[in-house]
Image (cartoon, rainbow, N blue to C red; front, side, top):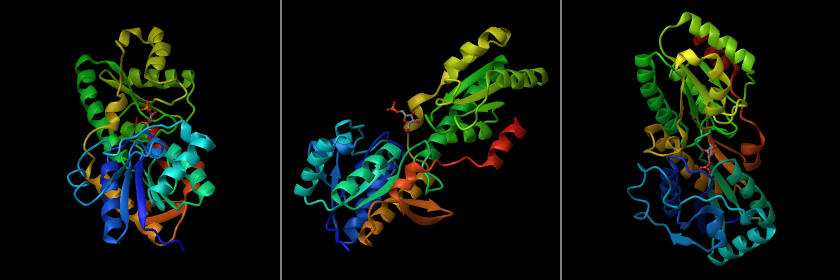
Length: 325
Ligand code: F6P
């Protein structure tokens, strides 16, 4: 078993609220165990550029409540090439880093899996993405905050939709996964919820809408994930507009507002648990793993399974959406 003396912590891919809480927990847990901590700025790009910063108890003070990430995020093309990874490895080895805590989503973990296999460096992944699309954890860091941000916006849209008796199409994030759409759809009382996991043809959408509009006089809300096969809210409205002109349709794309803001209590606790669990996993000799929380217990799974297995949406929840519309 390799003994870890210095870990490198980085955030990568799209940021998510709670990443700072994870950085703080990983740093403080490592220091508690006598392990030094280096922050790597801009994810994999920072490894290639040797953009390192020492992390200590005080440098991670007063960040648990902040959205974004003090270590910054980047999507790094050079790291996808073997030459880029070689430079990255040489730089972190020179820095004395002998274990990595990778906070991010599927892209981050794909890169980490390859890197760990190529250079034998132990890596523990911490699932941080608002999309909640990683297997091996019930929820990812940032999902709860994004959900509540989207829901707050949807509630407000409902007020004005109700006042004008309008039909609104609201687009939420989720390029490949519909978790945000599904749960904001339920919590916001949407009449129709569209997501990539369920194929809904235009004909079916129109039939459903006709039924809803025939029974309702007031506001009507369609929640659509950006990655839905319809193409998203704008595309969907262009398809529907000719047939529903009298409903004074409006479109709202919530976009990156869902990625910002102070993390909820639930995300702060999840991030604290997972940041600490990642360091504990490395300390205990795990390599190439992801930490998650499943049924309220810490679970360690192979890093690869986090992104290679598609996290499925429960049929019972899908049924609920149809029942409650
Ligand atoms: O992966 C999280 C996510 O917010 C997706 O829901 C969204 O499609 C994507 O990131 C947007 O990425 P970017 O900020 O790079 O445009």
